Image 1 (cartoon, rainbow, N blue to C red):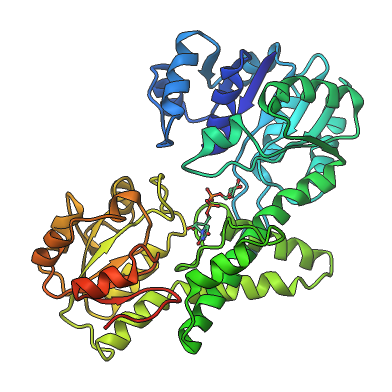
Image 2: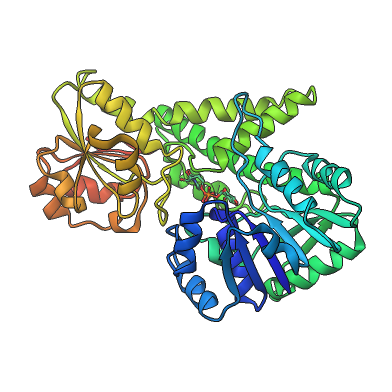
Length: 436
Ligand SMILES: O=c1ccn([C@@H]2O[C@H](COP(=O)(O)OP(=O)(O)O[C@H]3OC[C@@H](O)[C@H](O)[C@H]3O)[C@@H](O)[C@H]2O)c(=O)[nH]1
C-alpha cells in the first residue's frame, strides 16, 4: 500500500519504518528540514534497539523516504497517518494545535478518497474535530480513523511488529477494510484487530496507560506498607502476580513512573474527565502518589545521614526513565539529582545511553563518569534509579574498592538481600527488609 506519515517523532518514525518493513511504500514528512536531510542520508534521529536495522534496510530498498513536502507525500497515499505531538497544555489538557493544523493543511491538498489516521494519543472526540476540519475545507470524501499506538520505548519494534492487539476506531466499512489489509501482516499470530467507534478507541489508549500507571502506583503503595509492617514486596508481588486476573507484568515497585506517556496521559485523562464534569478520583490519587514516590529514595538517604547531606558525594546509576532508552523525560533520576544537590551534596552520574540528554538539560550540575565504576570513585554511597541490565551483576569487589563506604540505596531492587548481607553492605531498597 502507499502510506504517508506526518511527523517523525518516536511514534511516527517507528510506525513509518515498521509499515515499510512489510512491503508498504512509506513517505514520512516532517517540518524539521535538518532532521529530514539527515534521515535521507540514513541517519536515524532516535535511539531505539533494532529500529536502525529496519530503517536502513527500508531506505536502501526505497520503501521508506523522507520529505518536507506534504503535497508530494500525500498525493498517491491511500492512508495518511498523523503522528504529531499532543503535549500537555497549560491546564494539563492535550494541546491539539499540531493535529488540527496538519488536518487543515492536508484538507487543502486532497483530491481523492483518503483514510486519515490519528496515531497520536488524543482526547476523546478528536476524530470528530479532525473530520470537521475536512468538512470545512474540502468536498473530497475522507474517513478519519483513530488508531492508538501501544508501543513501549526500548521494545518499540517488537511491540509494533507483534502487537497484543491493534485498535481501529471507525464506523466506515471502507476504512475498516483498508486498515485490516494494512495491519493483517502484523497479527498473523492471531492477536486481534479490534474495530470500534472512534471515541471508544481514543479512550482505550488513555485507559490502557492510566490503568498501567495505577497498577504500578498500587504496587508502590504496597511496597511502602511492606516497609512499615516488615513484609517483603517481592514475595507479595509473586503472591498476587500469579493470579492471572492480576497478571505478573507491571507489578515492579520502584521510585515512580516517568517517561513521555504515563505522566502526560494520566493528567490528560483526569483533565478530560473534569471537562465532562466527572471527578476521576483514582487518577488524582495516582498522580499525587507518583510525585511522592519520586522522593522515597532521597528520603531514605536523608534519614541515613540525619538530614545533613552537605559535603556528601553520591554516585547515581541510571538517568533514563527506564532501561533500553536514552529518554529522560519525567525521569525520577532528575528529581533525585535536584533534591540531593539542593541539600548541599554533589553527584557523579552514569547511564549507558542517557548522558547526552542530561548534559543538555542540566549541564555541570553533576559530574559525568565514563563508566559505572568511575562514578563510584570516592562516593559516600551509591543510588540506583534505572534497572539497566549492566547494573544487575556488577563487580562487587571493584565497587567495594571504589566506594568510600559500602552503602547502597536501590530504587529498583536489583540485588538479592542475602548477597548484600554476605558482602557486608548497608542496603536500602524498595519495600524490602533494610540491610544494615
Ligand atoms: O513494573 C513496572 C513497569 C514499569 N514501571 C515504570 O513505568 C514507566 C513506564 O514504563 P513503560 O515501559 O510502560 O514505558 P513507555 O512510556 O515506553 O510505554 C508506555 O507509554 C507508551 C505506551 O504506548 C505504552 O503502551 C506504555 O507501556 C517507567 O518509568 C517504568 O520504570 C514501573 O515502575 N514498574
